[in-house]
Image 1 (tube, rainbow, N blue to C red):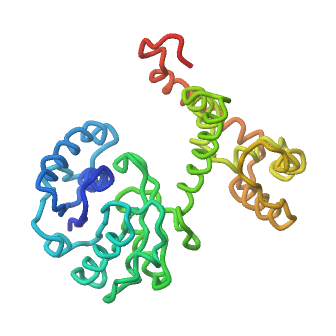
Image 2 (image 1 turned 90 degrees about the vertical axis):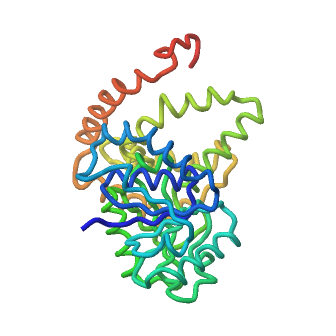
Length: 318
């Protein structure tokens, strides 16, 4: 039996959800008050479909399983999952989510694609089943990138988050359940920190935008795509791992390497970081993790070099 994703708001993110669900063989029902929205969405899906075909389509996947309807109420009827994607203005989101909550069956999870608002604020005007209104924040392009941050609010029960996790997994997403609500969730806070520091570097005349992007593209970004921040630093500590790394480089947190203030490196924080990294390492020695990282980077470099500036004929670029 096919599942239905109902999409409210069809900008770039809404269209990304539509393309992903269609590729997974779901039916999609969409509503957007803009009369140009259907044509814009179908053009978006057509453009994304070649990439989705290369990834592999689910049985029965077809752009023809998309239907636009004339009202929000009609859109959410029969939904297995509802995704709200209206502009990032809290009063507007509260209004639309309250309308969805009033119209949708109580069992249906309502995910908001908000980048920064807390779910308790989003639930504020919902009176029917406010706990099922959660943050379900994806990353662009939604039809390719698998991360979705799931955040419950004050009215959300654990079972509602678990139902949401299973639904997004059915869309082949990687749900990251955020332990407590906070503005910007997790990933956007990390990106925002890097963004602010980058703006300082440009403003202070330290680097151009191209030079800053090169620092990520040819350096830390390649490692992050496999191991993220903490496991990368775990390897930097050699055979003793993260604890040695913190002993060696922890004092640098007091140096003016960034415009952001670092937290106090307490024993509690050190233990949390070390224990987390040891859990990620899963008993594997650093030398084994080094080999795994190196194998990954060799394959990744073979791929990304096809997309670097010189491959486009842009000689003299970083």
